[in-house]
Image (cartoon, rainbow, N blue to C red; front, top):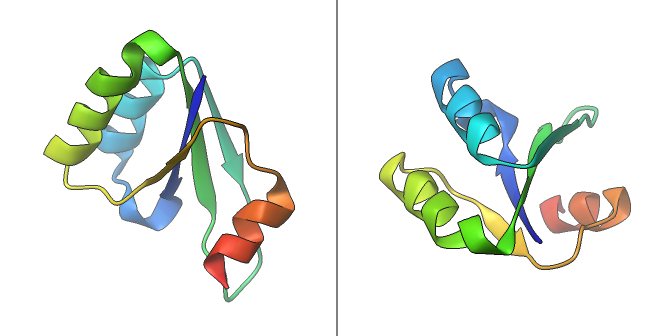
Length: 79
């Protein structure tokens, strides 16, 4: 599995729905100010390149890891 993290504020509704359809699982991690909420997309290994292509074509910034990040790791990445 691959885990893609995208800031929720960077996504339009259409982009979110498009990525949600391509992902196996989608979660939203909600943080308080001054931090942005994050969308975490879980993607099968076989779908990795197609998902990256979609993110790149949509011009979205993302982070990707092979193990699901904990809430604390997500927060540390924003500091």
